[in-house]
Image 1 (cartoon, rainbow, N blue to C red):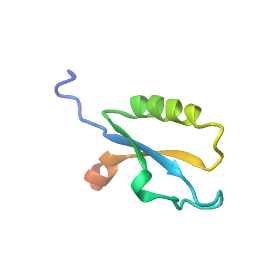
Image 2: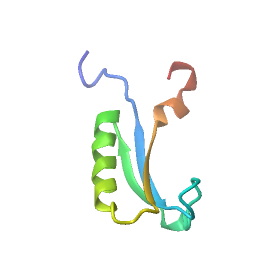
Image 3: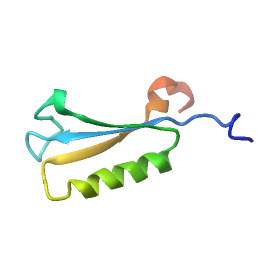
Image 4: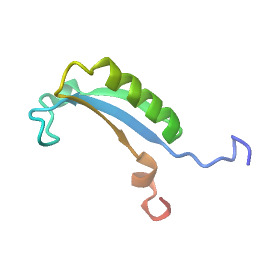
Length: 77
């Protein structure tokens, strides 16, 4: 299968500072860091690792990978 015919597996990486360490509630929704949308999990994981490493000194900062392809087409995810 060529790249042009390959099914996209979109993933989004984003993060922000949490209110507490015990739950996923962001302090400032307007301040969320939308890192980007990536064509596959591997590239999203690389971006996530980079951002997580940059913010390792802030215990409240968290980054996440969202599987957009599952939201866009849940029956075929």
